[in-house]
Every structure is written in structure tokens, then in C-alpha cells.
Image 1 (cartoon, one colour):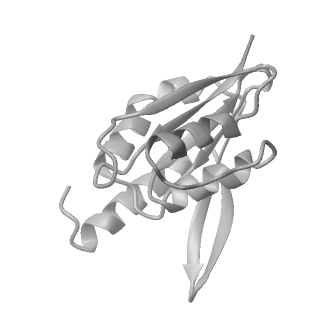
Image 2 (cartoon, rainbow, N blue to C red):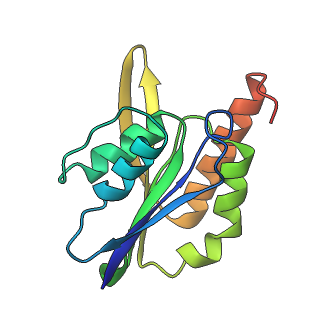
Length: 146
């Protein structure tokens, strides 16, 4: 049976593929999806079975919006890159109704202070969407044309 899934919307300036999605079966770990994405795109990342959280953070740190679901317990966890592309924001907004079916909706976001990266947790679809919009505008203000 299906345990959940991993979905990655790559930064289109790095990877042309619109979306990577992999179902995770009951006897598998979410890290399997992250490892396949890394391998398919020659990112050079290697994760152990118990590192799905670190894997999601690592993928987001490279600029790729991603999330994982635990369908049997109704949890969805997003990993937001520091700059959200138009494609990533559009994907989130187009699937917002799907995300609302999960009982627990959270996200991990990055903030950089000097050379240290901190991770914060936020909860709720509206809060997450506002953060995605803010991070999308931030990338536009820095002169990125998308």
C-alpha cells in the first residue's frame, strides 16, 4: 500500500523538468524519492534511510520547492527554498485545495544570518502561501527575470 509521496518542483533555471513525483510504499522511506531526484539530476547528494527530513532541507537549499506526505496520518510537510520561482508558486497555488485535505500542514523555511543557516517551522496553508509569495517577490527584487 502507498504510505505517501515526495514531490519536487525544481528551480527552472537549474532543471527543466516541471515536476518530480514518487509514491512511497508502506515498507519504504521518503528519502528514496529524494535520492532518486538527486541521482536523476546528478546532484551528488547521498542520504541514509533515516534522513528524509535532511534530504528535504538539502533539496530546498539547492532552490527546489518540495514536500512529502504521510497519507495514513494526514500530514504534509513542505520545504521552501530561499527564493521561490514563478513556476513553484504557481504549482503551489494550483494544488492548494489538495493540500487542504491534510490535517497537519507545515513547512520548513530557511533564514541566513551571516554564514549560518537556520530552519524555522510554520503552519497553515495561508501562512505558507504568504511565505511563498514573499520569497517569490524577493527573487524578483534581486533582478531575476522569470
